[in-house]
Length: 299
Image (cartoon, rainbow, N blue to C red; front, side, top):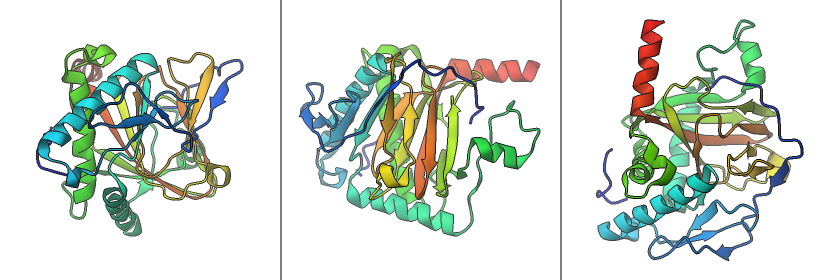
């Protein structure tokens, strides 16, 4: 990627499911032109059932001029704004391309092989009185945290920089819709997660149930040759824009999903029967985060 880019859980809650939710299946084989994608962005919808799912068909960043990359970022920002306004969710496939995505996966494999991952924990305030085994019934992933400056994380840092440009860019441009209601200037470190198969999962939950300031979740998937019928591991999300439907999202290689972190988008990771990798970033609303810090210090 060129140098023009700027350097800029989770307590489980009980939700009453929709009376008769209709899963919207991920079907990337079906492609229809998306009127919202144009110019250098070249986004097309990839499923007639999920209107917020798109595919990037532009050339890799390494082959773009700096101006082309800037234009691409603006166009994707516009798509994120549109989908977050309508559905609270946006999915983009082929984000970085095969070469860069494979380089990120290699870095994750190296981290996992060194034993850097530990059991995922529940957000502060969750009921952990029964010990680690009870927590693992809620979430079975193994995780580690990186900021992109660690040795052998160069490609993960590229991903983080791109997601920063997309989320912070969408928040700051003119006519940014619901995203414009936030002041997004910072994010978490990247949580690198592995579900090691054997039916590991994460039950239905909300990333930010306690108003800690997180407003947007971004998840990048790294799973090649993934077949959800055999491997499981679907992300089932309940989009705020569909009160009567749910969306089943395959955790496919080089796919990113953005969604609201609060109670508008409950979601779950269904049991995975093959090793499943993802990288998650959370973006904070500055005012809400400061309010949360003040409330915690006064309690």
